[in-house]
Image (tube, rainbow, N blue to C red; front, side):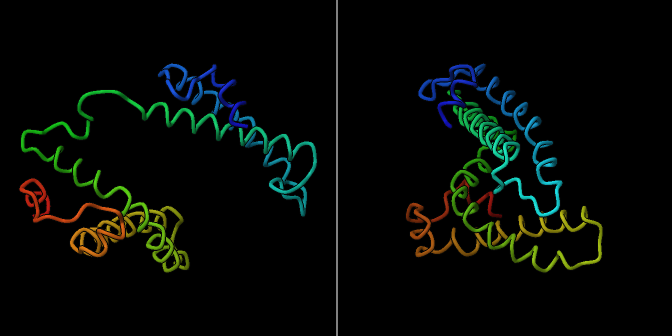
Length: 185
C-alpha cells in the first residue's frame, strides 16, 4: 500500500522530500478521504453491517481508499515536517526571550508528554462523560484538564526526578539552567 501512496502522491521520494510533492500528497489524501468517508456511511447504513470488517465490494473499496488516504497524509506530514531551516519559528526570541525558553522546554518534554497524556485523558474523560452537559462543554473540559494535568505531571513527576528522567530516556538532570529557571518561575 505504501508504494501506491508514493506513486499517487506524485512520485515523492521519501529520502528526498519535495515540498510541492508533499503538498500534492496532502491534497490527494484529503480527496481520497472525502471520497471514502461517504462510502463508510453507505456501507455501514445497513443494520448489522460493519464497513471495517465486511467483505462486500463497497466495504473493501472504501477501506482501500481510506488506507491510501492515510498513507498520503503520512507522507505529506513527514515531508512537510522535514524542513531544513535555520531557527524554528517557535524558538525565535521574543523581546523577553520566552520563545526560545518555551521551545527548549517543550522539545525536552515531547516524549514524556506524549506518554503521559493517554492515561490522563482517559481518566479525565471517564469522569466527565457522565455529566449532563453539551458535548462541546465536555470536550473543552477534557482538553483543558488533560493539558493542565499532563504538563503538571511532567513538570513535577518526570522533569525533577532522576529515576523518572532515566526511565523516559532523558539526560541526567543537572541543576536548572538559567533559561529553565526563568521559565519555571
